[in-house]
Length: 179
Ligand code: 5GP
Image 1 (cartoon, helix red, strand yellow):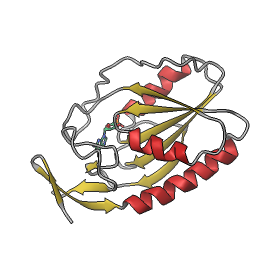
Image 2 (cartoon, helix red, strand yellow; image 1 turned 135 degrees about the vertical axis):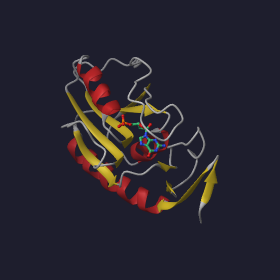
Image 3 (cartoon, rainbow, N blue to C red; image 1 turned 90 degrees about the vertical axis):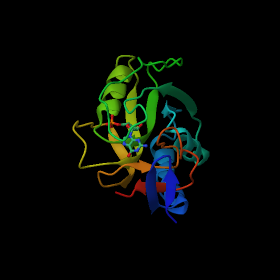
Image 4 (tube, rainbow, N blue to C red; image 1 turned 180 degrees about the vertical axis):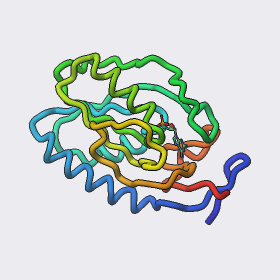
């Protein structure tokens, strides 16, 4: 069923069940790859909160969780290219294995910035898990981006943590804008 959020209409796109199934697969890969590494999952708020929660729920190895905040959208439907905050991350990541849990990679600007900032703190390694990737929008080559749950067209989506005007984050599935 289509839904309305503020002034825009959205249609169902990726079901909650499909999301959970992909997350389980990605978690299984991470459980194997990081078995003896005690990784730190780093999430960018607010969009990552559901993805992070569901991903780490399936981890059966020791791991830590930390959050930071960066934003380049400011409530609209296109990327503004300005990252509004410097990196706030209280945990010491030197010599630690970092797994970034990113909600969506659009141009890649935010992720590129985050990876660079984290590298300055000398982690042992960085891997990125993204729930969604828009291959037609990406403008950066980010070699750390190794796990992608779904590749989607260059369309605006909400749900499962992603918002439009701060609304829609609570939806269990992903919805795309009807134009
Ligand atoms: P990038 O820096 O890759 O261009 O944009 C990344 C950020 O823009 C994401 O973390 C997310 O906050 C926002 N974003 C990009 N595409 C979408 C979209 O389709 N829907 C929503 N709600 N946010 C998006």
